Every structure is written in C-alpha cells, then in structure tokens.
Image 1 (cartoon, one colour):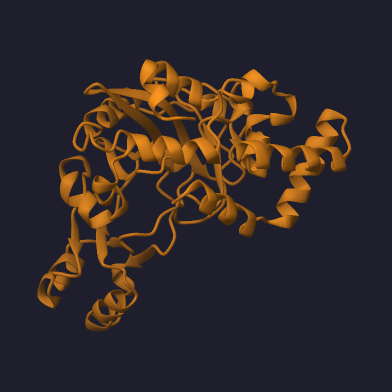
Image 2 (cartoon, rainbow, N blue to C red):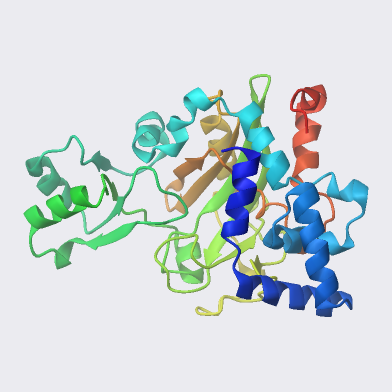
Length: 339
C-alpha cells in the first residue's frame, strides 16, 4: 500500500464522534480550544501523516519539532515497511495457513486447512476437541473469527460446508491461556505483542505491549487496554486504552493491575527472537504471543506491526517515539530508507 493510499484510507475511516471526543478531551487537558486542537490535528496529518488517534497517543500537542521526528507516522511507516520487509516474503505472515506451516513448531496447537482436508479428517479433528476457532486466512485484527463449541454442533456435514463457503479455511485447536491471564480477562486469549527488528542477521526486540480486552469480546482487537511488561512479568507502565482512559483494575473482573505478575515473559521475548530468524527477509514484525501453562506460543506474526500501541506517551509519560528505537538499531542504514 502506498503512502497516498494509506492517507486516503485514513480520511475515509475517520470516526467523527471519536475525533470530536478526543479533541475535546485533549483541549480540556491542555487548556486549549477544541478549534485549536482540531486545526493542530489537521496540520500534523498533512505534514506528518498523523491520524487523530496517533495524535493522542504521541501527545503531539506537547511535542516540539525534534521530538516529533522520533515518532513513526503513516508517512514513515510505509517507507519503513517497504524497505525492511521484502514483499516477496510477505505471504509468510499475511496468510495464516502459510504462516502456520512455517511456524508450526512455535504454535503449541493443532490445526487443519479446510481447503485440503476431507470430511472424514474434519470430523476426526472436531471430535478430538471441545472448542475450536475458525479463521479466514487473510483477515486481521480478530475480524471474521468464529468460535465453535463442539457440544453445540448439530450437523457436522453442514458445518463443514458452511465454513468453506464463508472462507473460514483455518480451523485451530483452542489456546488455553495461563490462569494468571484468565483471572484478568477470561473472555479472550490476551495476546502479548512483541515487536522485533532484524539487523545484520541478528534479531532485536523493539517494543512490547500486553493487550487485554476490557469487555466480553472473544477476540483481541475489539476493545483493548494496553500495558508494557518487564521480563519478570510485572507491569512496567500505566494500563491505558485507545481514548486515554487509565485503569487501576479490570472493569469486569476487578483484578488490580498492581498485583499482576505473568509467568514466562522472558521466554516470550526469547521465542519472538527465535521466530524472527525463520523468515529474516521480513525484518520488522509484530508477534502476537499467548501465554499457556506450558509456556509462550505464537498466535500470529504481523508484517504490519502496529506502531501506535507501542509509542503511547501515557505508558510512562514518554515524548520519544518508536522511530528513535528503530534508528538506534539500524544506524547508518536509516539513510537508505529516505524518510
């Protein structure tokens, strides 16, 4: 996708009510008029490709010119991706079935491809599980996923036909997350995003964010709060959502975030570093990792790693963005990208 196409898509996807709310919140917090904030949002969008949610997450109203240069924007993001991720290899991430074949040893779960699985093997796979998830191979953000409770199936033959007709060709065994995460939010597998960058054959960790649903959605990506984790599994930032709400506890389960400690986080970092070298031609990847009682497993890899969630100033009152960390690793190679 070109920068121009992405800019046009951002314009088409503007949620006016959300924009108005964010502008109002930012204006009140910074003692500015809503008109001033909206004009500043517009200027930053035209000059830097900053959308209104990125404007909030980067605290752009309080950034100077040099600080803004440290942030990834729509304009810089697609130049980074074009340079760092070889498009000939993108299908290894964008197609979930191809991804599962390549990264099978990191998945920790069984799966089948309904494009090549006959009805007999489908029935056998169904009977071996209690809960399954059917996914479209090329969708993202939790869209189109169907949860299947095996005991509720009335007609297996009909289900087989329906899944194929709906394009839900990937059928996966349920991931059972560790109790420490289920206690926080039992409605979905809470994914741990780890962003890696490969430089000169060596993988580096750029950022991380644990995503926790704050409603009863069965897939991450619908209504999330975010937090950073340290290697010891403790939360090392505020817990925040997309509209700058800060949480001391989960709104449904009432778990206090200050008491949270998640096992296997160092192992999750190590897993991401190993996975990053399986397809080193895709150098910049956001790994979604689930934590199970047996350790971390990979849910998926994202060749378009979300930069907004990892450069959120509210985490720790930061005014230095994700681009600075990328530049620190790439060094002189940054000059070749032409930002």
